Image 1: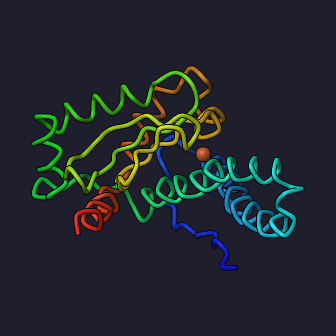
Image 2 (image 1 turned 30 degrees about the horizontal axis):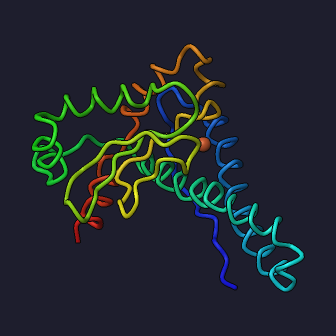
Length: 198
Ligand SMILES: [Fe+2]
């Protein structure tokens, strides 16, 4: 059976988010990769006696979406910080599409920041839907409940408390969102978009 492989990231010094927090956060990511692999291994093993193990198999299968999306969401999250922060180029296709959809880049940004402040743990996501050719904002509870079927991730903002509480305290959630956008390398997002519209 093929295995999911843990990715490595070249993350620079960030505004507001400490190296220590990134280091701890990467350990959580590592756990998702490990558990996504573990679930598939256990399913294979327990399937040898599938009737007897039906209940456990069902629960493992149910849990797979949690571990898999935890792994993939974090890969989008950490990759966005790689190299160095870069603004979204005024000439970029992604900016043009955001402006078409929401009227202006700032209108989209304000809407997205508001989504990020949704109460509870989860992710604020910007997706591209290849069927309707639309960009869509979404809130995802935990990391799997509310992912949009068939859509490609363009931007993934982790709003679990582990991503900011050590640096910002619970009350600093809004500042974490502000700093996240300061730290973002939009070239990576432009690449995500270019791949999504291929
Ligand atoms: Fe996280």
